Amino acid sequence: MKRLRSALAIATAMSAAGTGVAAEKTVTLAVNGMYCSACPYIVKQSLAKVTGVGNVAVSYEKKTATVTYDDQKTSLAALTAATTQAGYPSQPIN
Image (cartoon, rainbow, N blue to C red):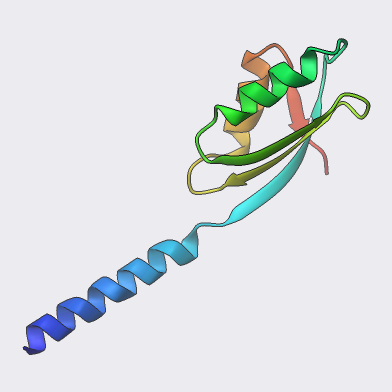
């Protein structure tokens, strides 16, 4: 019985620690090369395909993309690589 309780306590602690580590982050990227009305759609689709991305809002007027993502599933480097591969190099705005 003690082993069962110990195993349950360890499993619960590990489960809680795993969910507490992940964090949702939001970053705004400056996106170069958006010159037509189709560009924001392409940028949005390239970012939305990245695993871990939750929300993408692209502004043609501001030449930016605001991305909400799970930092345990993707990284800032993966986001900028996705836009660059689509033909629109980007970098985070400080």
